[in-house]
Length: 64
Image (cartoon, rainbow, N blue to C red; front, side):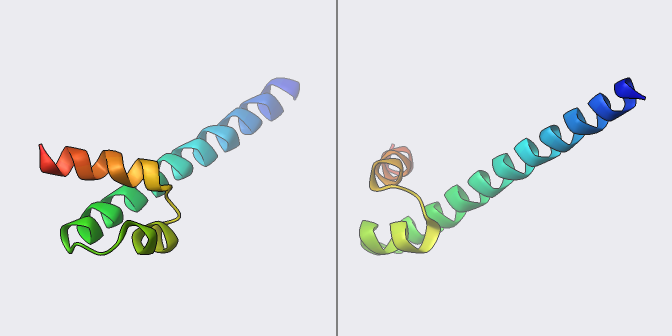
């Protein structure tokens, strides 16, 4: 029984981590799209929840 419970806990943690990763990727994709529209970084940060430094990194990737 303990093994089954441990597996369920591991599975739940894995699912949560996967969901977080997907949310981050979605935030970054939304941010990239907004960066292409030349909105101010502060506005994009407010909309996406990403930090200005993260947006600057994404902008640098788009510019290269």
